[in-house]
Length: 352
Ligand SMILES: Nc1ncnc2c1ncn2[C@@H]1O[C@H](COP(=O)(O)OP(=O)(O)OP(=O)(O)O)[C@@H](O)[C@H]1O
Image 1: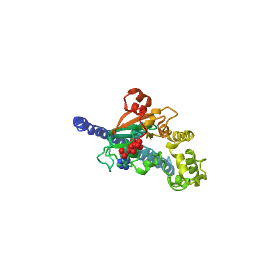
Image 2: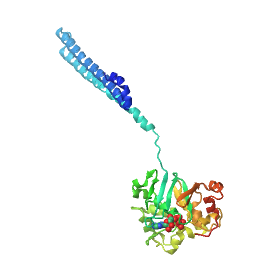
Image 3: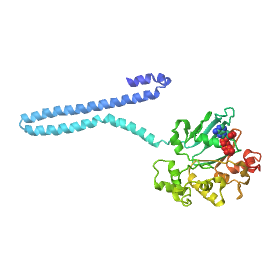
Image 4: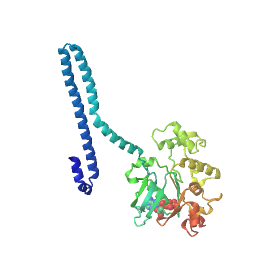
């Protein structure tokens, strides 16, 4: 009846988009029919054979062809065996369900989930609260693919550091969305996201306590091995006059500041930056555009620039609140001699 009802009403079922629902119901109906018939047949065989056995056993006992004890023994074997067969029959609907369920299990296993690990800034508008009338960002989009090294370049005051501030969620954009690992930054736990972001400042902050305490400060329950590993990674392990109890003074700060490096220190800092950024999405902010004029030269006057932007996969030029150009160094240089990037690289204007 259900089958013919489904066929008769198939048009309405389609119109009301019940098709999938109707197919499932029809399948369930067929399954319950099979289960009912199987269970009925199993019970029939069970009880009919019991009746047969009682009748035949009684006949044999009456004619003294078999002892009652033997008949009873056969009866017990029969009851136990038929119960086993009956219970197996009762599992038939479960087998049917399992065969349908296993399909969906394999569908889930075979599914190729696309995990978005890109960081994106979409349609970013921003003005500092203290200067609400100055729209620093006027709606730009920008994407960093997982593991990519990106350099944001632009005139002083164009908002390069502010982009970093938005990614760290020091501020929220007035309009637009920041996505980290494909997730809206406003919807993720701030502490968790910040624990995955490392910020290397040009002027590093060291607290007025020993180097050891400075390292421990960033994370609870740090072991001695981790302290040494952190110092080794930063290439500071052998350069601390009093070991880890060294109190950071002017000299240590000077050593760390990327803008005041001699060639050897620069090489060391670069090696450290290369190793810690390997395989990570990195955004580098090049503060002094004028130094692009000497981009490939060893006499590059502003070390910080050369350090941070070297080997960037992508350069993004920030101008007047938007990302005006983006691409790799060679493409941008080749694109347009009057282009923003070209001008930045070759401009001989004095330092900002
Ligand atoms: N906390 C703040 N409140 C108000 N205005 C700010 C704040 N921080 C920065 N600004 C202003 O926003 C603009 C962009 O600053 P930002 O530091 O992001 O630029 P930048 O491109 O990194 O500059 P530079 O290359 O000189 O470091 C500047 O005009 C700056 O004066």
